[in-house]
Image (cartoon, rainbow, N blue to C red; front, side, top):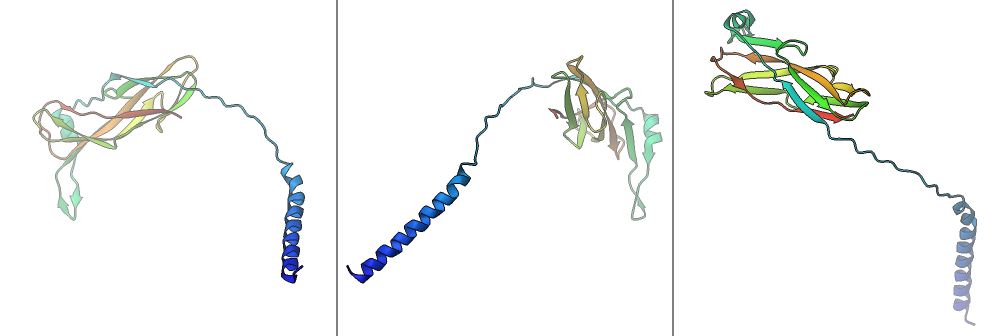
Length: 183
């Protein structure tokens, strides 16, 4: 037999012995693994439904506009007067909505828009509505619980109307989005 063949066979034999040893040493560790079955449960809650009972409504007369007028200064120069009217969630004029869903569940509601501009039918001056506040059955953070005795919760939404020019008489309208989610 040739020396190089002998060396090659010894080398391969050593590799085989080392690999076999590693397999036998690690085999008991593999047997320590275990499997366990577990259960899965899925509950699909009913779709939340929102019904608007009363719209958010500002009724402003000219005397109130004069009382609400404040001058603002920018760099020492007086700018146009700013009119601000606020309706709190517990006051007349606040929007009233009922939210229907699964009993005994936590929900969270938000007004999606941070501000909306209202225009009259003639496209006249715009009025900005912002600073939305939630109330009624929901906390100011928008969270509430549909109780175990009912399938609905009532909420109210207040806001602030702002404008810098005296708007034209008439009806102003726009729309907002109330988003309600199971929490």
